[in-house]
Image (cartoon, rainbow, N blue to C red; front, top):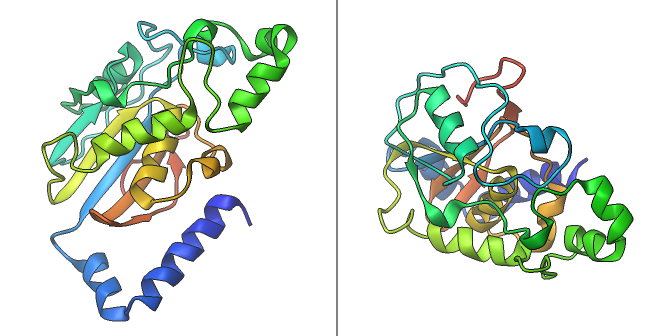
Amino acid sequence: MSLLDRRNVACRDHAGQRGRPGGERVRGSRMATTVTLVAAGATASTRQSALPRPDEPLLAAPAALPTRLAAAWCGPELRCVQTAAALGWSAVPAEPLRDIDAGRWIGRTSADLLESEPEAFVTWLRDPVFRAPGGESFAHLVLRAGGWAGDAGGAGWPHGRVALVVAPMVVRSMILALVGWPAVDGHGIDVAPLDVFQVRGTPGRWRLRAGRSLSDGGTADE
């Protein structure tokens, strides 16, 4: 059983221990919010296992996915804006939802970094509090995303379905921030371009649902 599967089971068990009426209320309540997290599509850099620049365009746009949304946001990167537009969603770019800052490593491939700076690069991948040279740590990204997620950037979470189109690392951080898992668990969640995850509930009571991918014909629906 993967870390993600174990966490899903733990969340369900925890909800049950808090009382069946409360769990049913979140599951069936019209007041709940479903947050659909979509990882932006691939770019030339991500296809080469490189850390992408903010202005890189998509290699291929996903098919339109008409969905009735109460609100939608996206990262400020071009690939996030283009992915949201291709899906047919009117997403508002939000600066706090930007990808992790890899500092002077931006644009470089994993193979290059493993050869030239193996210790620092591997530590950055494994240790959530280790900062990239001139950049930030994964733990800082979780705090940044969590600050925005507290009240949807000041707008408040609307009831119904909302969507976020962000970089894969930001998808990880949003899952951790909403569900309340520690940053160290982020590397146990695999997120590829166009992968979709859903978090459902109310502020302080979020549950992670199963992930899927749009790249193989999947949908963003539950």
